[in-house]
Amino acid sequence: MLVYRFLFLLALTLLATNLARAEDTVSSPPAEKPPPATPVEPTITFSFVHVDGPYIAMTFDDGPNEKLTPRLLNLLATHHIKATFFVIGQNVVEHPEIVQRAAREGHEIGNHSWSHPNLGKMSDEGVRRELKKTEDAIKSATGARPTLLRPPYGSISGRQKKWIHDEFGYQIILWDVDPLDWKRPGPAVVCNRIIKGTRAGSIVLSHDIHPGTIEAMPSTLDQLEAKGFKFVTVSELIAKAVPETPKPHKEPPAVPATAGSPSPRSTIAPRPNG
Image (cartoon, rainbow, N blue to C red; front, side):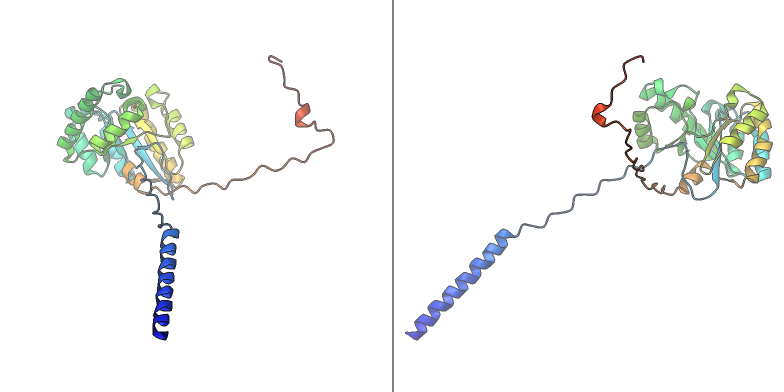
C-alpha cells in the first residue's frame, strides 16, 4: 500500500514539473533578430573632399591644346606637381601624344565628353555615345580607361549620375574653386581668385586652352606652395578623405523674462505692408 502511495506522489511531482516547463516555454517569447543594417550608398559626386592635411587637386578642362598644354606640363614638371586633366575626346584624337605624355608623367586623365555638350539635356543614348567615344580615345592614347567624369558646365542630373556610375564606374567630379578663367579676366585675376578660394580639400577648376590661364599658373602655384598646400590628383584626394566630425549641438541661451516683456498671448501680429 505504501509503495502505491509513493508511486502516486512521484507521478504527481513529475506531472507538475513538466507543466511548469511547458508554461516557461510558452511564456518566453523567441529572441528578436536585429534589423538588417541599412547598406551605405557609396559617394558618387565630389566637389570638395574633407581631408586631414593641406591637400588640394588642380584640374584642367577642355584640352589637350597643341601649344598651351605642353607649356603647362613643363611648368607642372618643374614644380613636381601632379594634376588632373579632364579632356575632350575630339582633342584627344587630334593630339594623343600630349595625353600620353601627361599620363606618363603621373597626371590623371578624366573624361570630359567627346564634344562638350550639355549632358543634362541629352538622351541617355546620346550621353552614352559621348562618354564611350572619349573613353576609347583615352584608352587608345594612354593604355588605361578613365575612372572620373566631369560633365561639361557641371550639368548632369541625379538619375544620370547613377546610371553612368553603374555602367561606366565613373565618379562625378565637380569643383569648389572656379576662377571663371573662361571669361578671360586676365592672369592676375585668375591667380587671385584661386588663391582666395582654395582651402584644404579643394578641387580647383581651370582650363588649359586659354593663354591667360597658363600665364597665371606660375604665380598661382608659387603662392599655393608658399601657403603649404600639397598637390595630388583627384583620385588621390578622394583616397585621403576622412569623416567629418559632427559639430556639437548648442542650445540657445535662455532669455530671462523682464517686467516689460509682453506675454505671448498679448503679442499683436503685424499687418501686411506695414
